[in-house]
Image 1 (cartoon, rainbow, N blue to C red):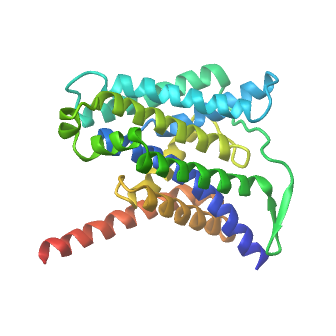
Image 2 (cartoon, rainbow, N blue to C red; image 1 turned 30 degrees about the horizontal axis):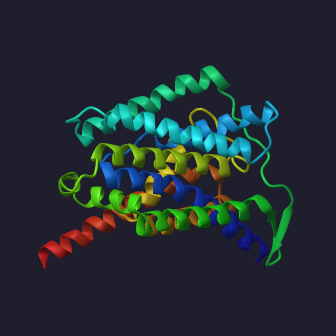
Length: 284
């Protein structure tokens, strides 16, 4: 029983990180219709930046906050390159984000080398229902709950959030009433960068990160987001949690070598189920 509880909690924590990554994808896609393939790079760059800042003597908290801000800034820059030119189609912007993600490899190897890195998270251990686990897992869950709740309030209760929602719903109508669609798109990329960076900062103390970890991270984030059709944050959270729990159970009772395959099978199953439902709706 204790073993199962441990797998479930560690899976929920990993799922929260996937949900943060997926939420970044959702924010960017809803506003710009661009699938950002550089989303995993935000997490890797932020995580590696924390290792450097901590080595330079900065305290925890400040180092993580600066790394997340850096990821937001890089997100803004990628958004500017991918969507800043008028008339750029979402398909062309997607290719640009893919190219920038590959470019990030060279930058990361140049600055941090090719060896995996990590840094200590919240210390200590906690016992939950007889299962003893690192307290950092609970920190991941708590921070994710606060951040996703804050993001929901941003979109529902603030003028800025409503402008983002209006742009996502109808860019032409938003432009007519004076909303800068370009600025909203850039803001979406910055938010996506911050969410991706936060995911990387939270998960690195329990999973080492290297320059090519973005592939696994973006596959997991995309698998979570696809449950909500890249537009629904709530279902993205559910998708992330389901994926994290299944991966933890497979790793615990089977092998850690199949975690990426689990994400791909999860994504494929969702796509097949969604396609089947659409066929039923069209047939009706």
